[in-house]
Amino acid sequence: QVQLVESGGGLVQPGGSLRLSCATSGFTFSDFAMRWYRQAPGKERELVAYIVKTGDNAGYPDSVKGRFTVSRDNAKNTVSLQMNSLKPEDTAVYYCNVLYGWRDYFGQGTQVTVSS
Image (cartoon, rainbow, N blue to C red; front, side):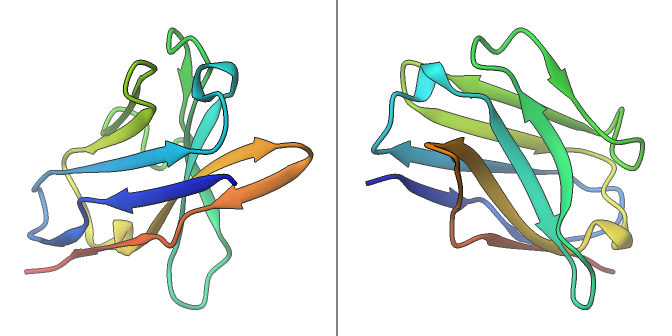
């Protein structure tokens, strides 16, 4: 079955960087676009990055554009999110996502806390 496992979260000071990774299994990774979402306490889940199946196109909302970069390794079935210039408002649980068989799959999430 589809499995997504995020890692790399933690506590970082404002202005710092983190790199999140998502290991996947149970589907042909190179056939699917991938997404990263985040959800802060009391807020709705927010899309922060997507990357097409070939990896040669990606998109971001204005809130993270220029600071976050999504990438993928189709040989290793992994997708990553490089986050730079982090702000306190980036604090959230981050999830990777795939739409497979008309169903959205999410991992368990990884906590990112930006605080001094």
